[in-house]
Length: 309
Ligand SMILES: [Zn+2]
Image (cartoon, rainbow, N blue to C red; front, side):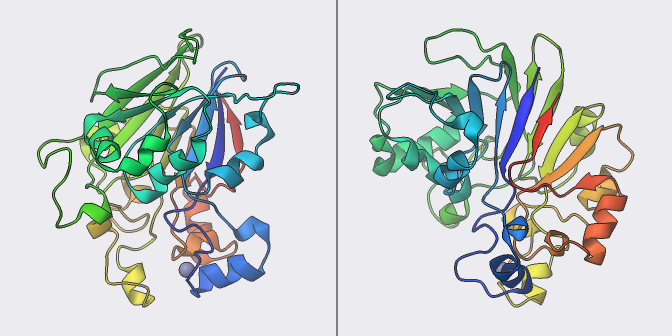
């Protein structure tokens, strides 16, 4: 049995974002917790006892506090059910939470060498003592079985694959510690429970829905997909910035080339948007965009949403 918990469904900055007074952030600030989103991350488990995180957001501490499944077990002085963290990119909203996981518990960080190079180049991540926290390189199209801290098998398989994207925003115009060439900055993941054969996909950053990507995810029981922006130019139109979704490595939900249209003809049981930016009107219940997404079969998950496959 594969259990998946949405720890956070928001994009970088979360909803509300600390310095933002846009409509979505104002609504989330004053309209109640159900309108708020922490930054994107999910937890998954094959046995309900040992858990793996996909990305470690800056909101990780808050997310763990809100998720009893991830608390230390009763009676243990020091314990965590978290056996590992799989990183799909090196953006702040994917890696900064690692800094909250320093306190000596053993776990493994799985990431492509390009992302590990960035962690290695930033000495603050040395708070994760190498004796306890292994950094395991993962490679495109090479499935691996994440291990438990004692080396035991997890019964899960993770397949990393390249999706159209870009390297981290803070590296724009800078030298990439992992080199400029090749894929690896933006990964999609296929997570399979080896016992049941059930699987889901995690693709929280994706600049373009290619035919190859469509073929990869067709037939999945569950897909988490990049829901950063509704329209490519929505941040510009709202006066929030000068960047388009595409320039940040995120395909829009709407439009002929958008995720909703491009994935409409696939056979996928459950489709959830993740990494939803505070500028995205789907976050407002009752908005026409929210209705359009839901009518197209997409779910806009609340933080804490749990799914069993
Ligand atoms: Zn905002």
